[in-house]
Length: 269
Ligand SMILES: [Zn+2]
Image (cartoon, rainbow, N blue to C red; front, side, top):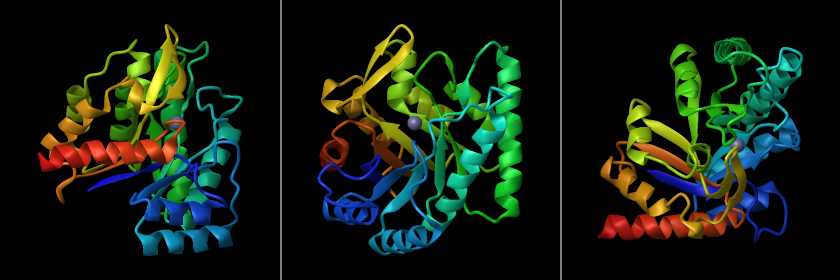
């Protein structure tokens, strides 16, 4: 299956998260990422209720955790881990499988030191998650700025070494980080052992430092059609393999619908 939906409440929604999920369904979409990037805005009871509705409507939920996370800075690790863990708890009650986060910034440490710090936190977090029996996956996102930890290879190494972690592929970030280049086939080869993928897509503006801002997919940078072709060729969209594609475009659900149109055209041709 290919699951599509917005990063956050749809732009057309007049109301809260619950209404957002109902609108996602009405539009013919089937995924939504809850944006806890500036704080967790739901309590446990609300999360349980929202999770129940999403399950009924078969809308797959995920969470984008706080932007204020830096596992590479020893002074900020404790607070960062707490923010991730708080999202894991609410995610558990929501039935949101993936808890997405940007691991951190390189700072003055070496690549190896940064790697070890992020890995150590992931191990610690998994211990807490498992102790509390939270049914969630730690989603380490590929990041868009060259100053950030989070190339695909770094993320994949962590996922290989720490159980319960998954790569969140942000195609726009990879494109921006590589100066406007992306090889979908190479990326999908690298993650072929994952039966299910959770990803982000949008257009993106960038500078020599990487990501500048997310823009609509009509920019064709990167090109969604090329990705869609690769996905169909590799059996996504069938029962064999699942992918969730969250639109981080400024026009959110409109671009999810555009992606759906592009995918439908390809599967019918
Ligand atoms: Zn992100």
